[in-house]
Image (cartoon, rainbow, N blue to C red; front, top):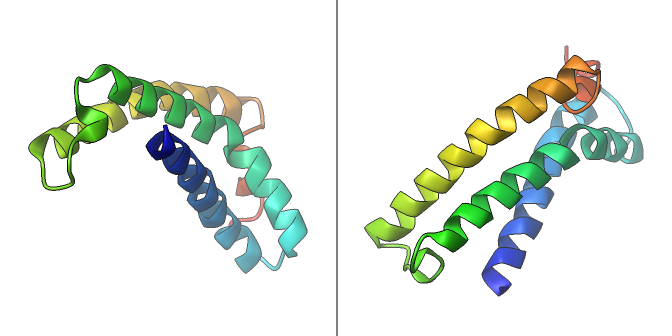
Length: 109
């Protein structure tokens, strides 16, 4: 459980940080950039993490595999690949409705 919580916290932290970086470069203040990042990435990151961690939980011993293990890297690749395939249509749907990453596009030059 601690590994899952850490993975989820880090995914949201770095996801929001990366989104905010571009918005901050556009001259937007920190609070507004945070709002944009929250609107742009929350659903995407939540879906990605739910699928990624769900897949890792069903692969036997994947959560306990050491970093130098082929099981660690193989299961991570499979989980991220499946999560990507699931998340792309979610993001496409959100962008098509002017939500998700479409919110941040106004700030990219």
